[in-house]
Image 1 (cartoon, rainbow, N blue to C red):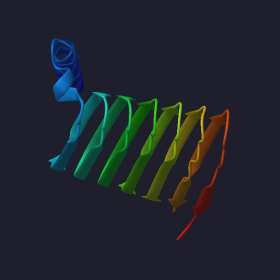
Image 2: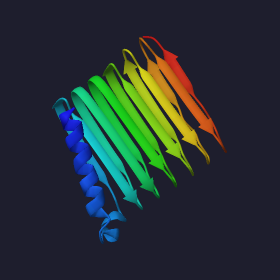
Image 3: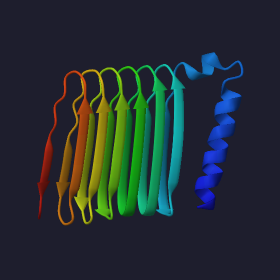
Image 4: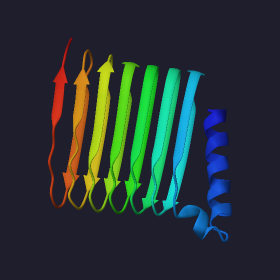
Length: 170
């Protein structure tokens, strides 16, 4: 809990400092994070233009939160291990989100608002839960779960709408 608070505080400070004369720094956005071990946590917020974020976690007790506002968006989150949790929020423009989880106790969610949308959550293992919400524009979405306690939900409002949920057991 302390780690989440520290990450949230650091992100708040960075977002405030980032708004002071840093328009050029925000225009190309890109982040890649790789973590291994125990209690991995990553949080990122991107405002601006050509966003892209890739986060890979290997280990136990993993948590990811990604927030993107602006133009070209895009996110890939990969989690391998136990107690995986990933959240992606995207607002505006071309959107795109992928969450891949393999292990036990997987939870993945994505929220996309406006423009091109497309999402995907794949989970393999136990106690799977996936939630995707899409509001407006061309939509998409897809959830694939294999094994044990599957639960999936896709909500779409406005425009293109396409839904795919595949659940199975191995």
